[in-house]
Length: 300
Ligand SMILES: [Fe+2]
Ligand SMILES: [Fe+2]
Image 1 (cartoon, rainbow, N blue to C red):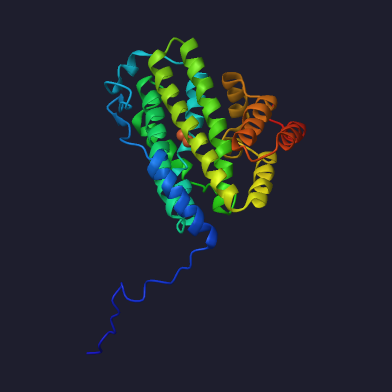
Image 2 (cartoon, protein in one colour):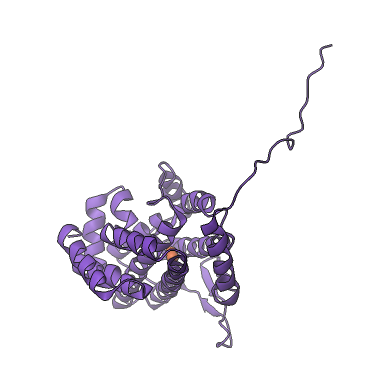
């Protein structure tokens, strides 16, 4: 009998990696920041229609939001919530591609894992709202999620620094979106839904602040390049749902009506706000870029 040559699957499976100077320096600094301030404790528990948010150090008990099934929300609010969930549900791409991109950056990799866990809890909580208020069945949640996987989301930029900067703008915009959804839920007399949306908005604000600090670390390492990247990304800022929603026109109409987004709001509250928050972009450049954005983008 002919003998088959067998090579163990773990043999020769490793290749050498050389860390760049940027990853070595920023990786260590981001690790320090993560350990000191960014690391977070327990994640939300989302089970059988109940959302439990672990208490902060300043609180005495966990926040438990149940009885969501007694609330009603409008079709339009449900559609916008489903649109936000669709963006959250690209997590396999954000994590798969993002983790590859930050593989060599010690702190950024750790930060990314925590970020991904938090985005996952948003998706689960939004799913809970839609199911408990009777807008989706569990089967429909699964069907929509899997249909969403039918195309990839590509990362908008190719370097870790650019993704960090983009993240600061994106998270600011997402924060404003969830705050608007929260307000709308309050107007529709759905306080439990509003409460969950408010907690999600809190996470997004925290993500914005975190990415802003990470951008400052990149700025310490390469001031000029970081400013150039920031201005370019600001000028070209776009929300992922604009590109990916299967019914783009309906989405745009609902989003503008429910969240009251306008290009002026994005120019001032996302583009200008984030450039100023970095603290390394001169005010004159920040205003000029926000005006340029206002001149060329069309959100409505
Ligand atoms: Fe999120
Ligand atoms: Fe986020």
